[in-house]
Amino acid sequence: MVLLAWKIHAGYQSDRQTALEQTRNFAQAMSAHVLSAIHLTDLALSRSAEALSVLDPDAMPPTATVGQLLATSGRALDTNFLVTFVDRNGIGVVSSNNLPISGVSYLDRPYFATRAASDNLGLYVGAPDIGRVSNRRTFFLSRRVMSNSGKFLGVVAAPIDASVIAEVFRNALFQPTLSIALVHSDGKIIARVPRFAESFAVDVTGSELFKEIKKSPSGSYEGVSMIDGNRRIFSYQTVPDLPLTVSVGIASTSWTNGIRDDLIAGAVALGVILIVLVFSGRYALASFDRLLTSETMQRGLNEQLRATKDELRRGEKRLWMITDNLPALVAYFDREERYTFHNSYYKTVFGMAPGELLGKTLREAFGETIYAQLKNEIAQALSGKPVDFERLIHHGGVDRYFKYVYTPDFTADGEVAGYYSMATDITDMKLIQDRLQRLARIDTLTGLPNRNKLYERLAEALARAQRNRSVLGCLYLDIDHFKQVNDTYGHAGGDAVLKQFGTRLQACVRQTDVVARLAGDEFVILLEGLAQADEVGRVAAKVIAAMKHPFQIEGETRLITTSIGVVIADAEVDNPDGLLKKADAALYNAKRSGRNAFETHQPDQPTA
Ligand code: GH3
Ligand code: MG
Image (cartoon, rainbow, N blue to C red; front, side, top):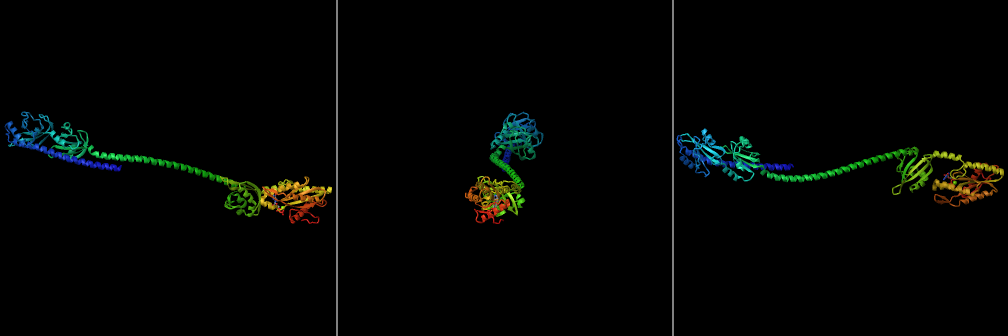
């Protein structure tokens, strides 16, 4: 826009300059023409005045003589030229073209009055007026006529036809917006083209032209024409020594046409730029909008993410709080059996700092022995089966019973990713249980009478045997290599064997016989009311034979054997403890002789 404005301004300035120069040159040329035209007429006037100076100032000038004189002096001029002589009283004498002016009074005419009133011998140039006789648009030139003796004779006057000057002006109009005017210093237009007829004698005293003339005899200005109201650039030139000014105007429209083209081109360019701007602006706004929207969305998502993360952190913290305050060992193991999480209860129980176990395996953290005690259950959990079990753990010089719960952790694909481990210290509970067990009469695992009940029954049986003089046999049994069963199948496997073992023992004896579990893998059978002592050995053999079928342990089969110590009670001397000691001694022999057999206590055999 600045460039365009600059370009238009420069164009305007240059066009204006051209217009100024054109009008100025033109005004000068026209002024020169007017000057020469007036000079020509004035020449004839001067000659006429000169010729008339021979007249007698005291006599009435003879019309014929004056006519003769005027015709001679005006001869050089064209046919339009006409000169009139008015005598010193203002009465027309003669005119060179024989107009009937003789006797007509011209006293009031300025061209006469001014020249009669003063002794000014110079040229008078009159204001525009309609000729009284000719009826033409004219202005008069006049000179004072003096006699040779220096007396005032009258005035010679010559009208100049304004239309002739206008015609010259009109022929000079090289373009239609041009205006040329000849203005009299008293304010009236003598000749102006175009609109010669309407503008003739119009008073333009109040015009800008007159303000300018007051400042300088020639110059230029921009203004509005009083005749046609058009805005123009004017140049004026005062005709030297005459009360006349030539003014040439050129309408702004003509020299602004060039600018108009520039304006149109500029406006089109600007329009194109504006359209491009609007579209690119709209595109930019739309992009900005999209950016803003996506940014807002992003911010919203970020907030959501942060909120979710916060919630997650809070949840995690809550979990930590819960697990840390739980009176249990809580841990998570990955597929490689490494700790990936453990709670602070590990510190309470084992003195392990929070996080100390992370990345370690159970074997690395607690040693081979404890790992061996748990590895079966670990394998089960990692195969996807939840397990719960109890185990006596010896660590750091302390024995503790733990109740374990292993819960497998599955991935979305159903694969085992690891397992959760929760171990509750049930040592106190176990102690109470043991105490209760001891107080109770029934063994909770096998449902058989326990040690207490056995002692009761044994005491009663001994008393009965003594009373009835009957045979009382006692079998003391211990499962062979039971530790291996525990090691292979775990404690639960061992328990299963103990239960089946008890059941098989019961099947080998009469209902009235007592089968009791003494402790661990030790069992006792009391055989009452036997007819013969050798029946006891037969029952022992039957028991050993009953173990020929393999046991079912966790879906597998395994042969279990037992060793038996056999004793026949001597009711006179035996008490429960003594009798069981003898049986134990026999058992010892059975074990020593290779197991899976029974040995009978010999009366001379020493007891432990
Ligand atoms: P041996 O042939 O010399 O008898 O060898 P063994 O391996 O059987 O040795 P022993 O009789 O000394 O071991 C008995 C084991 O029984 C020791 C103990 O860990 C285990 N035990 C004791 N009570 C229980 C129980 O209630 N359940 C299970 N599963 N095992 C028990
Ligand atoms: Mg044993």
